[in-house]
Each structure stands twice: as structure tokens, then as C-alpha cells.
Length: 525
Image 1: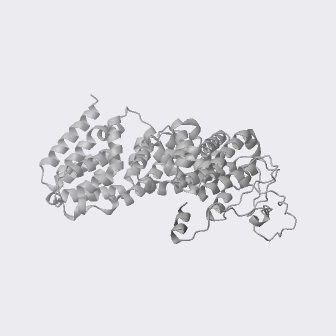
Image 2: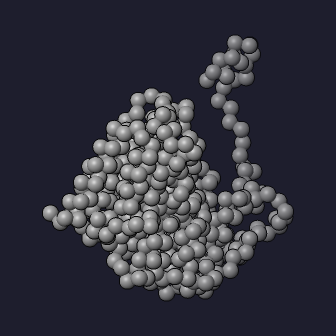
Image 3: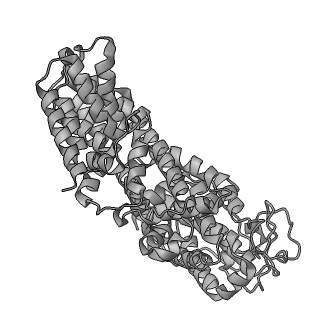
């Protein structure tokens, strides 16, 4: 064994013995000062290999010894709080991962309310508020010169993410507000940003690093249902940081790529909900949907076809993200085909709720707004077939909103695949839903799709239009010919030619009744 390392082991053993048995304040302070040299920041530093030996092998044992001595009497051995400040510095200045685990271990192992429990909880509060969790995650991102221990990282991960539940169970009514989920997870989001800033600095210095641990933290938080709390802090800051930095964009892409498969849906859903615009989502995700099958399934199918509770801006952001890159645009066309296949299914019309049908209709219109005329012409026949099938089964529905959805979507599809021809027009109520759907169909001005101007009342289509529709749904440009001698202001029923009944005569098959009984029997025949 290296003599220097052997000296570190002997020094630590002697220090633990003194701390465990001595009641002399001067002796205790001197011993702690000796150990503090191994953490750096003193006038008498030790050799780098001694510092590394202490941090990797002996630090946790020293912390557990300090926890065991924690009591009001022991801290009061030194007047003026000197011993207490030195005691706390070991947890706040040493390796953050080990300090955090020892703190959590001490809190969980303390039975019932006590001075030690509250003191450790207050120290953990200080640990959080001084950025030590960011330092903890930064330590896991650094280039690893030694073999990693998966069990250690898994324990660390579960304690970091599960801290509000663990502290709530231990402290109960004495719980501190910093440990409440609504306060802790936004703080954790801020710490994630700080850890990623350290990663960017490592990369700028030419060092290799990994964001795997941070990705696992993000995934575990989101899968436990706290995605809004953490992403409400994380996404706005990443939006700014990625705006003018390709390096930050690559770090964000890697962050999402490293999320475990079981958490991909929760993370993607949270990001799509939190990202304000498609270009922001593009900077955060990159071409993840092209590389990752699970992400592609979530984005192109689950969020659009299997779920329908998401907001319209979220659908616009999601489909706009697919439209922004040439590698992702084929997925947009694929999504449109699958949406139209569902939209044109008569069984789906009968058995899916109106809200889901409206959701799918909105997604179809947003897709059409992002596609250009050449792309639409390539799938013209498929669009026309799906439109005809969908409109037919919707016009047969007894629900006016369902029929209206079919009319509006058919009008938009017709105007896009026949931009030069007469516009298809239906008669339907001009309500809030109709106006919203027509607004979604407006092509994006910055995109490469052809511009289609829509007024509040589209022009009628001729019955000879290439798009054939049921006669009851179409108005002709040419008004119907009025019968000779009829008044145009009369009702439509009065326009029919009356049937000649001048030769009819009344048929009598029985005698006129003479008594009341004959009247009754005649009425029963």
C-alpha cells in the first residue's frame, strides 16, 4: 500500500476514535480541522492523491460519525457555535453525492420527532438552497476515471426524485416548506439547468461528459406525475439558452435521447405541453422522432390518434415541429394519412366521442395548413378517397356537430387539392367551432404550402365540379328554374305542379247511419 494512502487511513481511524470518545472541545476542533484539510480550502492542503483517497473511501464514514455525535450538549462544547459551523461544513463542502445520501439515511433512520431529526432536516434545507443538488448532478456528469457503481447511482436517483415523499413521511407535521412537491420540483428544475451549464463548460474545454444521470432524473420526475412543476422552470430557460447556441441544442437533444424508454412518453408529453412554439420544440428535440421508435410512436400516433385531451395550441406545436425539418416532413404526411384513415372510418364515427372526432379534425386541418401543393398533389387520390368516405358517414349521422365536422373538413380538403377549381360549399351553422376549424386550415405564411384565401362565406360549387358529393349537401351556381306562373317568394312546397283531381268523385259503400250504434260501428270499420 502507498505510504501516503496508509497515512490517510490511520489519520481517519484516529480522528473517528477521538470524535467518538472525547468531550474536550479543543481536541474535537483540532481533529475536525485535521480532517477538513482533506476537503481543501485550508492553508495547509494535502496531496491530490490523499484528497482523492479521503473522498472516495473514508468520507462517508466520517459523516456517519458526525451524525452519531449530534446532540445539543455536544454542539455546546464549543461556545459561539464554532463547532456547529465546522460540523455543517463537512456536509456542505465535501462530495455532494455522499453527503446527500448520508443526510437522507440519517433522517430516515431517526424514529419520531427529535433534535437530531430536525437538525438534519434543516441542514438538508441548507444543502438544497446552496446549490448542492446541482453539484451532485454535475459530479455524475463529469468524465469518470474510475468504474461507476450502478447501484450507487440508482440509490442516488431514487433519493433525489423521491425526496418530498420521504421527508413528508419522516417529518409529517414538522415538514419544511422547501420539501413540499410544489416547491421542491421547481428547485430541482433550476438545479438541472445549472448542471447542464456545467456540462456545456466541460464540452467547451474539450472534456467528454455524460448527461445520462440528468436524463434519468428528468424521466423519473415526469413519470411520477411532476412534469409540469419541473418543466415549467426548465423549458423557459432552455428556450433562451438554445436560441443562439448549437452546442446547447446538442446538449438538449442528448438530454432527451438518454431518457429511459419507460419515461419517453411522459417527458415528450410534458415538453410538447410546455414548449410555446414549434421552433422551440425543434430546438429541444431535434430529430428525435426520426432516431427513436418509441418517440416516433408517441408523437405520431399516441398524442394524435389515441389521446384527445390536449389543447389546440399543443397540436399546432406538435405538427409544426414535424413540418420544420425535411427529415421530419415525411412523418407529417404519414400522420395526415393515418388521421384521414381514422376520420373516414364509419365505425370510428359511430363509436368515438364527439370530442375525439373534433380533435382529429383539428389535427387534419393543421396538417393540411403545413403541407405545400406539390406534397398534396402526390397524395391527392388518397385524400379524395378518405374525404368521400368520411363525409358520407358523417352526413348520415343524426348529430348536427358530426355532420358539420364532415362538411368543414371536406371543404378544406377540396380547396387544397383543387386550388384552381370551384370551391365546395356546404350549408352549416356559423358558430365558434366552425370559425375555429376554418382558422386552423389557413396555410402557414412562412411555409411552402400554397395560400388559400377563405372568407366567411365560401363561393358555391357547381354540380359539375370534379368533387362529387351527395345532392342534398351541394348548392348549384344556377338557381332552379321556376315553374311558369309561380311566385318566387312562395314556399318551396308551392312550386310543385298540382295533381289534377277534377274527375274524382266520392265513393259511398254503405248506407247513411240512422242510429247512434250505426255511427259507432261505422267508425270502427
